[in-house]
Image (cartoon, rainbow, N blue to C red; front, side):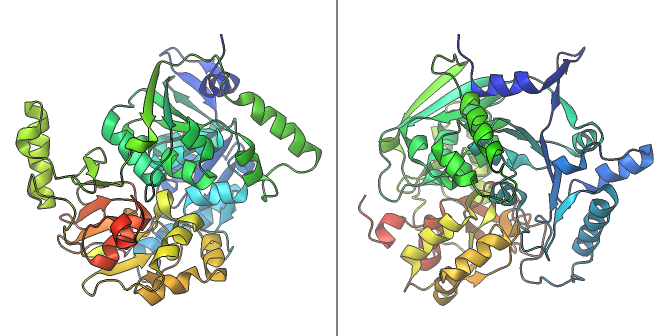
Length: 471
């Protein structure tokens, strides 16, 4: 019987089975940032320990770094202190650090693939929920807490319970105006925010075969929003082509050996899965969230659910709570809901292809007068490449602010925050209460092009209509 990629990687990285049934797992690559690493390094100092394999740990700054002020010291004293602490820790413990002066700084899940650090068949951990992004390359990647960051720094291993594997096939042809972001929002809507608990998701089918690496990253990135600890796509020629020539990719003969190993780690044709879900691509609409969880999503031309539409008491309470927080009326169309802020960026949709696609349609358009619109590249390299293509100018001509690289308004641990009950059309990954900085701020998740459509019209809009795409 064949094996899945997940099984192959898990078995090849298993150091021991612990008395509680968990696996002590070797972690090939450890990515760190300024928020979840300071305490872990502090614990190492308290215990008199060093980083066991510093060459396997890579650091950058993303969560707290301001996007409108790039010179230190930062006016935000907390951000300044945390970034200085990461700088100190990286120097003391010998960790590679892509800082603001490197030209390689950015969101950790953008920087890893960009540098060729993310490779197929490896295990990757990071103190961030959206580490599953790296699964787009056929890696088993997951988010961890600060204590586990400490464990990996000290031992290059961590304890983790085995997972089941759910294969999600998406076959057919996506309609115009439907993107990878719509695909993952649709999957989460169908399976629920907790539907993936205990699972790793393996994404496949003709849609994933045709997706670019950046589109695969968008889907894998939000696996955690569906409850799955990890999500991945089997490596293929696109994966190898993306990685070839990147700074940390194997070179020369080592490249050929690596590609052979990467091919072998893909799931076998006769692999058996714990569950299989099949989705028709033609059924995926441009999708937006209406509530306070990523699974509270509908097609842009649907109505917001009513409380009465809940199938049980728990669901009716959840709908009521979400409607009250979002200040939406059950049964009303989501299209036409006024927005205050538009945000294109994040580790989900802050890559060059995202900005390139939006610029294609945004050129010559203007952001509505009452909307604050910001575009935040996922890395300094994305920023440079976008500027070379004149993409930043298209955005700024339209009325967007073009910022420096960082997480920005995705989670508002930096100065980019909503104010009061502002409503944001956002290309990010979470619409939890208060996620974007204000305890009453509201978030509607959507694809980057849908954000652009909302920015231009000043309300939730169907990008196919705004930009004359054939539905």
